[in-house]
Image 1 (spheres, rainbow, N blue to C red):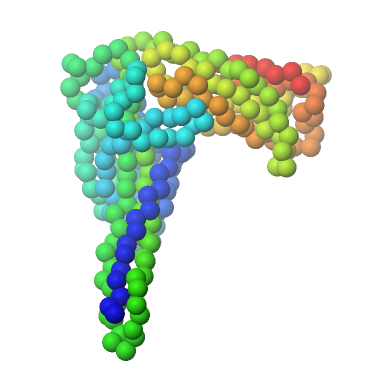
Image 2 (cartoon, one colour):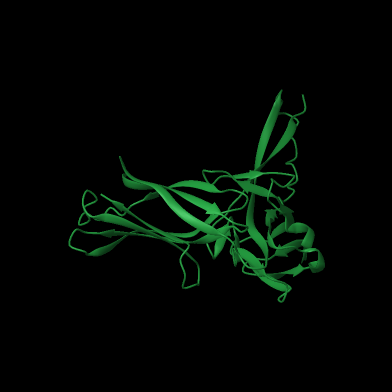
Length: 272
């Protein structure tokens, strides 16, 4: 019996770091924000850091974030959620990069007269296009019944594209702070409570303050987000394993701040 071939595509989605790479594609920056309508064009820089030529197809995807920070694909916006994709266009829509080659993708803000106060968000998805490999010539002396399966991984990166109009009404509070012991060390669990018309996005700094008042960094998290329309995100942060830090005494200080701004979203302390 002639052998049959079944191709399966596996999609991998990534949301991470200011200089971000998945597979052999590097992207900078990891998110685009149009603050108002004055600057209507922004650029994304792509680089192929691999050894082979690669092709990527670009498209918008719509997602929501659950209370544990997981992303869920959706087709229609949730209540109090608005998609940015109808007000953005990008080009090119497909890119082929040779090894060590770079290219710029332009994102343009359109239909600005239709935008209202608040936030609009969609995610620009860069999906690797798998190469079509010719099947090896079948050996007429080799007979095999059934079906063989070839699994082709398809890598992708998704970055947030956000439009904000008007003054932000967003506020954040931190609650339910607790330290937990595990085999890997101690972790800090806490809840982020968001209110208002915009997502919050920034960096987390956790400090241990000893009974004598000495401050020691205990953890840092870059690019932590709570996306609209979600109002709650629960998370756990692994604390430093520095043996000089005694997590049974003193207090933990948590500071959540927007990136590149001298302000704070929220601050809280936990007495140990």
